[in-house]
Image 1 (cartoon, rainbow, N blue to C red):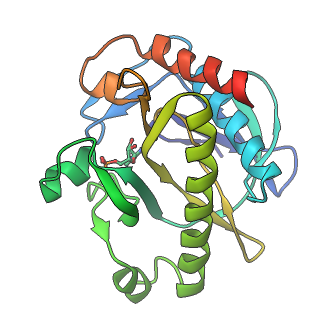
Image 2: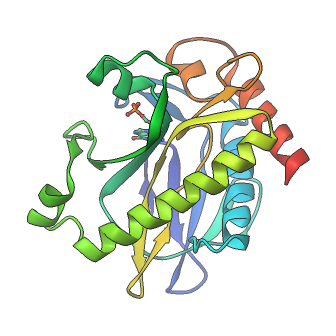
Length: 231
Ligand code: 5GP
């Protein structure tokens, strides 16, 4: 069976416990209202995400990545996806700035961790821990594991991006349950993070597409080039 998401395609893997995950060129924003397919977007996001997942694995984070098949496809561990998006923020931006009236770029006193329901139909509404467990989207221990891993990932990635002269403002993670263990799934790329040049504040992420600020492929490739130089 093939599952087509907004920017990725999931197909059966070589074994019953694996899947093939392909990054497509599709890029969407505002819950699918705006979309495009710049040539090469899938390959550059795949390269960035795989590089980050290999880095996280070396630093003790268990991820779904098994191996890279080609420039856009990876073999990943099958996991039962927890239908929750975890968003970690270091600097105010996007939905947070709008909702709480905090100027974009404001340094938060400490990182925040928030959850939203993974549902295009509902518009990914924000949800809290007691609501999640009350409606059975995840258990308390799954949530605790997700929070602990998200905080560790934030420390590792903030340090990695800083070496590349990039500020990690915020990012979104998804986890899955694999044999009773919570593992990092989905992707981490400029499609799911806010990345700002440390010296110029230039946006190097999907906001370039959301706000028509320039060439998505050019800025995503710049992120890849810088990460390759520091890993
Ligand atoms: P915000 O809540 O400010 O819109 O998003 C916070 C961060 O999470 C941003 O880096 C944004 O790109 C990412 N994010 C939030 N929701 C989604 C989503 O549904 N898909 C992807 N790829 N990223 C998301």
